[in-house]
Amino acid sequence: MDSWLSPKVPQLRHEAPGPVRLGPDGLTPDGDVRLYVCGITPYDATHLGHAATYLTFDSLVRTLRAGGYNVTYVQNVTDIDDPLLERAAKIGVDWRELATSQIDLFRSDMTNLRVLAPDHYVGAVESVDLVVSAVERMSDTYGLASGEGGADDVYAEVAADPRFGEVSGFSRVEMMEVFAERGGDPEREGKHDELDPLLWRGAREGEPSWNGKDLGEGRPGWHIECAAIGEHYLGGAPTIVGGGSDLVFPHHEMSAMHLRALGHEEPALYLHAGMIGYEGEKMSKSLGNLVLVSKLVDQGVDPRVVRLAMLDHHYADDHHWTDADLTRATERLQAYQDAIAARAPGAAMTALVVHDCMTDDLDTPGALWALDAWAAGDAPRMTEGDETEELADLVTTVDALLGICLIGGPFDTTCGCVESL
Ligand SMILES: [Zn+2]
Image 1 (cartoon, rainbow, N blue to C red):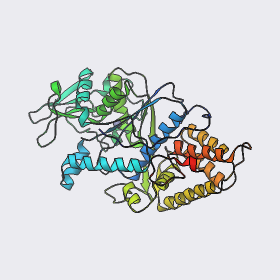
Image 2: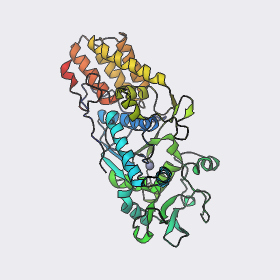
Image 3: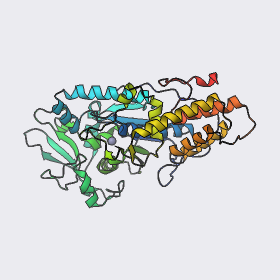
């Protein structure tokens, strides 16, 4: 599937200050990074909560690559699943039309926010064969009649995996609390364990289905979709898996179990982005309080301001968006631009502090504090170095690591700005 046009990432003008440490335990990736980030299910998928998740992993890719890591980045699109079909039926459009329009909107949001495109952007529909062959390689699976004379539904046995639970650390009670509301089907009769995840859904009347060879007509389950796409396009199991914190269970737990069943014993590092609410409530379609990136941009909000507003919070923290976030970020962007125009001293030292913050589990609020201090005239000069060179160091650092071009226009994908300093 086509992704979007990546902005150009400028070469840093300083050495990385140290290795990248990630997660609460400060783990340092070892060798090449195979990054898998769970992508959207294309319905209502372009609000700020999603933007925050993909900005998080954009910061991660930028910081890893700036630190010399070789990163392969795969992201999927769940372009066939129950929620998409349900929404399409509810609003009376063809599910493919809904998916296409939402994926287009997502691409344009990502482009406007200057998010780096993944190396492989892969849909579930185009990956049906991958899923089928993955399921065929697995043992500890069983079929349940779909009840309409068609192919069976196929499930995986959680009881067969002694490591089940290690990703989320959830107790059985905690698992049961969220399983149904996050796409699980504990009520399904005949399952060996009510938590067993669906691998393949046999065809139903009126539902789209694909040729599953020995599995029969049907469509992929969600967790195996990510496991199979990741394994194939990364050339092995992911070393880092990312997504929103609501994916911890069941999605990442089940995908990890499937990867083990496919022979990948090495655990990945799981990074989860916090949830974004709106002024004290959960952001949701049903509450009518979705803040869409595209709407903000249509209203004339500079996408760099949206980006700065999201970077003001640590990725792992839940956060409630308020309109004041935009005001603060607008003032910040102006202050940084004014400081460049005034050739504020201490830019090289600030560039290093920004980079250092990013290597510390993507401490974007710390990076912005450093920029605030510099813009306020509080940054010490590191050397009596060339002022223009120092400013160029800072501008390229902010562009490369934070994805914000401080000199070009709001929609520039290539920042050729250093020459104009
Ligand atoms: Zn996923």
